Length: 174
Length: 110
Image (cartoon, rainbow over all chains, first blue to last red):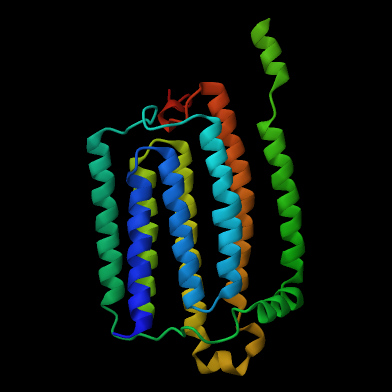
């Protein structure tokens, strides 16, 4: 077993265990923190695949921006383990069994394929900023510009949804 | 590294996300499980792009070798926009019914 395989196995175990802890922990704050661990380990996988730009963007956007937003909302609502709604155990058991069966079937069908290919590890420059930037601004300039419009509309949408509905409150008072 | 190892890892993460959606009732946790599923797909896309990089087709046209990673980048962009709107909806729901329990949202049931 060489070094790359060892790192891959350790990172994968860490990812799966943190993901399981994310859905198993009672307190929402703990769930958010475990999900941040998952995102960091996925960034580790990106670095092993030499996708350096995506590794950094994953940390900045997901672990940085999105998870801080989640943490902020959880703390705004003051959620903790006591206020956590719990599904009854029969439905939980059914969910776990059906998910496990799905995993078993998909994994066995993938593993039974005879042909397989190797993945390029640690080398290759298509994941570096230079080649990604050339490709993005040469071949994908229009989707890039459209995504800025998407961001603007998402921002306006979030503000419109999030602001207090004053008409409805006036009706309630009257 | 074999591509099957990456397929197995991404499948496990995706199924853990599905199980989380099925067994939890907190809307925020369900939303986080959706993020986990998106990340599993991202990881698989990057692994496939690095698998493609070893093939002779990719060596012939270097211009498009990083297409899959551009795709992952756009998935992250859309996920960020989706999270802002989704969290705004959850905050509004909390303001109206004072809970994040999805079982309370059954007004359309009867």
